[in-house]
Image (cartoon, rainbow, N blue to C red; front, side):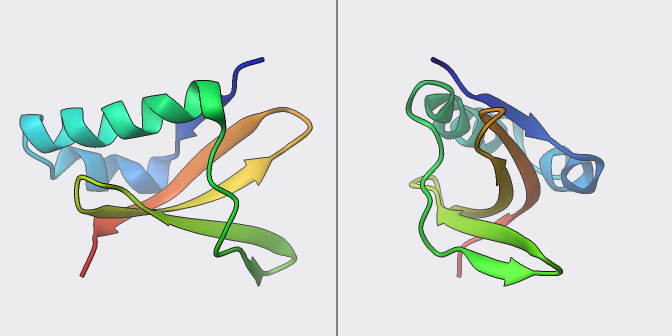
Length: 82
């Protein structure tokens, strides 16, 4: 069974600011989540919702929400890893 990985309006400026090569690298890593599902570590409760963060190999960190029963991941924030 596959997962749906979606971006949100809040990530549009983040993705728009990336050069094409970086955008492709981020997209490739997130695409792997379609089959495997997202990593579910580093979860923090915020306003009654668990938000997760994952560091991507390409040098970015994503913050996301997971709807497990629907097998959906919503990317909320994308930023360079420090």
